[in-house]
Length: 156
Image 1 (cartoon, rainbow, N blue to C red):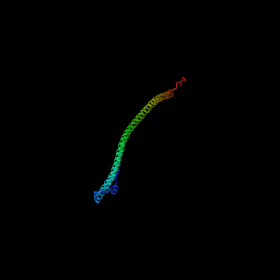
Image 2 (cartoon, rainbow, N blue to C red):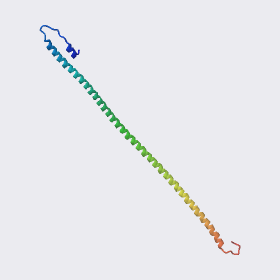
Image 3 (cartoon, one colour):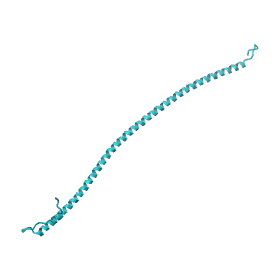
Image 4 (spheres, rainbow, N blue to C red):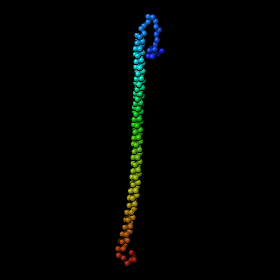
């Protein structure tokens, strides 16, 4: 059973013959009621402060937890980004190597084609030189035969 300040103020005692002085008891009860009322108000204020501090403490704890989660997430994301960048770099290097190999292959194929073309051109040149020599030799023979004096034997 809780006693309130009003209960203290309204408390009645039976009067007996050699009892306490009523005014003195009344004044004491009034003082007790005021002190009790003050203690109850202070207790309510302290409970409110405690609730506020507990709420604040919960908020701080939640913020700490959120910050910790954020740090863990940030660390994980950083690691994932590092791995992704490493994989991407490896892909870029592999792609560059493959393109380099293809370019080297294409250059070798072009070199082979050019060498074959050069061989064909040399062969064609040699044939043309040979044909030109043959033509020159024929013209030389024709010129030589026209330049010889004719002998009377009917030979050209």
